[in-house]
Length: 114
Length: 110
Image 1 (cartoon, each protein chain N blue to C red):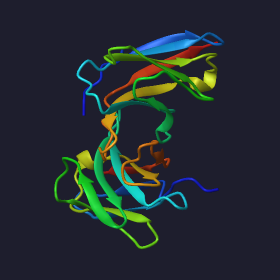
Image 2: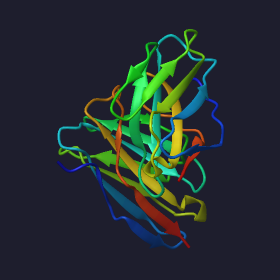
Image 3: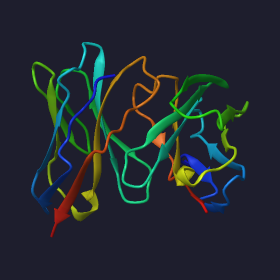
């Protein structure tokens, strides 16, 4: 059974560009969350989606947006990239919205902004 | 959600028990204690969680003090593959996010 899959695994973008990161949750999981992890720090919450609706948003600028599709996969979009957006972007899924039994994380997308 | 305090780093000899402490003195009655770990360049991995009773699974044991202001994650027989950053997180069941903090970097020494 496949875990949480994220694509691409690595990418390099230039300041000012736009990026789209993709996540496929575990089969049967309806909730997807996105986290940003800057080097040397713990992951920081960006968004949570459950049943295609936004259920939570962290302290990130409007340049960050996300959506969830009918098959529960999700995209994270970041516009007008800054050097400080360089980070590991993690996607996590859970069967239900509260993740009461924990979330399963993917291996992440390493974004480098130059 | 309550904040947690963990030592930044710890060492443990291979084969010995690793005891990772966490303080969460402002925890409220409906908040659970979760533990995750992150091995270099991978996503965080769920280990265990509990409310007030001690919990054990195939990976670890979680000991929560009676006043619930602190807890200890125990890896009974640490191996080199347990070298990772361990995060203690306090969260209510209705919460929709985890606050990871900076965690404890555990190094298992041969």
